[in-house]
Length: 64
Image (cartoon, rainbow, N blue to C red):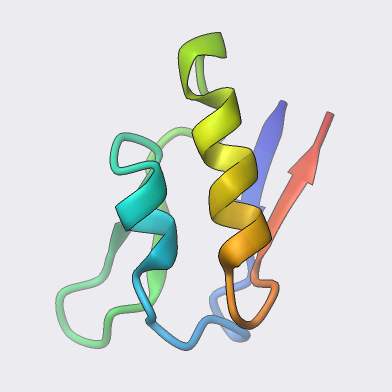
């Protein structure tokens, strides 16, 4: 799995960080998503899928 995020689309809700803290973070100044691990290990895959599913702006993109 490859994870990318559209920082232009991100609204800073933090749902991704709440679901997959080790894979996502937020910039301190504006809360925009930062991908910490673009190729997460298998144990994080389900949480990353959930994060993408709950993102209110669809800013998280997954490539299997």
